[in-house]
Image (tube, rainbow, N blue to C red; front, side, top):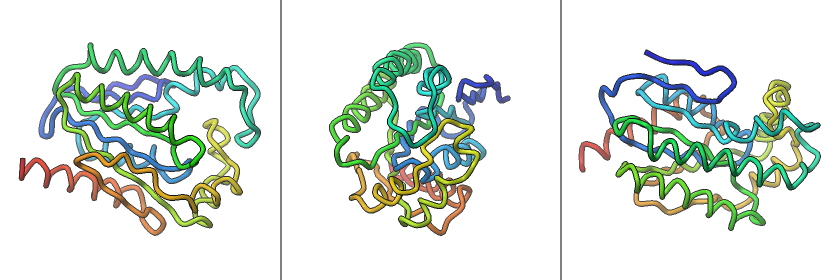
Length: 210
């Protein structure tokens, strides 16, 4: 049974049938499809989706923003407090059999240190939960990524909408944390259900050989 928490970004599914205690980390530039892929995974296996906007949107709702103009730096320190609280709750309070899908907006070479810090936070969550963890690096061709970020609904969701930045990020080397279990997927010509299916199949193959 799925419990919905409107506006929170969390989709909680009660029970623990099938795969248990996984952390899947979807990594890629804005617009690559992290949230929709996470939802596709959640439609296949029982899991909790914790999108990076879970901790960003409570702050973004309180300041003017258009998806392209740089945001006030204070936003990141404030949202970090929310992020740390959520990760602490996952580590300490969530049932041990629950699966989680997290997302990370990454791709800017000038933000590699910050991206690496976010990755280490998820590594620590996985350690504390004694969970299997898999990183999934999602990429997309520059023009397709620019088209995706220009979708009107992204502005309503307080997401990046700058096509020039999307082209730049798509042309950069993939940010890959090099976990033991890592999957790279080019999303250019795939729909979320196909991508989610590939991820779930990889999880199944890992379980079968563990």
